Every structure is written in structure tokens, then in C-alpha cells.
Picture 1: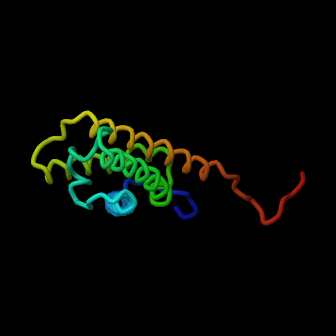
Picture 2: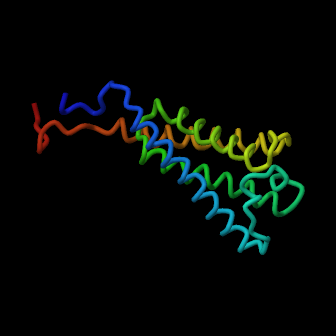
Length: 155
């Protein structure tokens, strides 16, 4: 079956590896964005900013900064999604999986399901941003012309 773009066989090892890479990249990039924006805004850096619902909202400067960090992280992770997955049809699946993993991480960290409007709104918008930009980037790659010969031939 050599020469195909991707085989149609279900490869769970590849899928798990992609999920691990994306989840790790999600937290690494989110941590870097939060750290960078906290240093600029002179806020206290804390792991709570990633996992608690109290640090998201439009009422305080630190909450707005965290929402911006989440949005920038979604845009950054869309490029990672493009690089790691590279398939338009799988972008929503992997973006949702990463955010469901984050949801589970928040439950484990805080001991309860997030209940604030801003936590849910931020994460829903971030899933949409990551999915749409990832699909756009993957679609551009998939739609590139495939060269059939070394040079262009006029027929």
C-alpha cells in the first residue's frame, strides 16, 4: 500500500500519540501565554490561572488577561494541530479532545465541575477558534496542487 497519502486503517497508536502531543502542547503554550501576559500586566503567576474558574472573567484585569491568553493559546494550538494532524476532517475531533482533556483536568484540580459563565464561554469560543483556524490551515495544505512531473508540460 505504499504511495498513499494515509492508509484507511485505524491506527490507535498514532491517534494516542497525536492526542498526547496536542494536550502537552496545549498546556505548554497556555502556560507560556499566561506567564508572558502576567509579566506584562504585573499579575501574580499561578497554576490556578489554568485550572480554576475564578481567574476568568471580564470584571477584573487579571480575568481579561487570562481570557486573552486562552484565545492566543487556541490560535497557537491551531498551528500545532495543522502540523501534528494535518487533516481537515480531524480538526474538530482533536480540538474537542484537547478541551475535554482540559475540562477533566479542571475537575481533578478543583474537585468540582466549572460552573461560571465565563469559564464555559471562554472554552467554547476557544474550541471554535482552534477548530476553524486548524481546518483553514489544513484545507489550504490539502488543496495545494500536486505536481505530476518535474516540469510543467503544455498539452
